[in-house]
Length: 178
Image 1 (cartoon, helix red, strand yellow):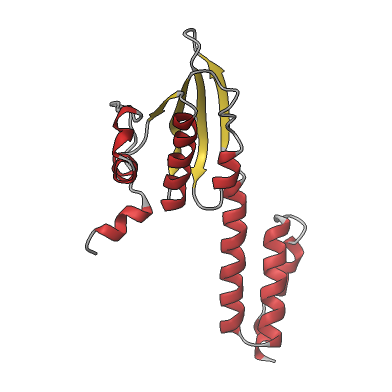
Image 2: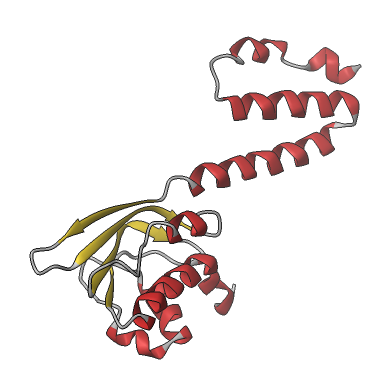
């Protein structure tokens, strides 16, 4: 009864103005609060919001394709590369029909976790297994370190530039003392 009496019922007036995913979370949390208790409702709300966030970000990864004058195909990756976007990332490439020289540019992308690192390693290995030349550009120093640990032969694949981003990969933090 306290929950029903103190609830901000005016929040339901804006339900048509917010995204559907937020409305579903709002209604679910409200119902669970009345049915069970506030602690359970908060936990469910946080989990639902995290899943919605991961889903939205997984669909944000894009690849712009172009061909340089020397015939090199360039994939410019845009958006976060993490566990939720790996499948979408892998679908952007066609290693069998791509030309002999391929460049994958991460200037507008952030490799956020170990799954992203594995996706980059996997796609590079596909090209190498087909005997094609692949260059990975604009990776962060931490991402380069993890890729080189997985395969020291990537020294020839990873290009270093002054424009390389400076962010930390989440899986690299496990190696550091907190």
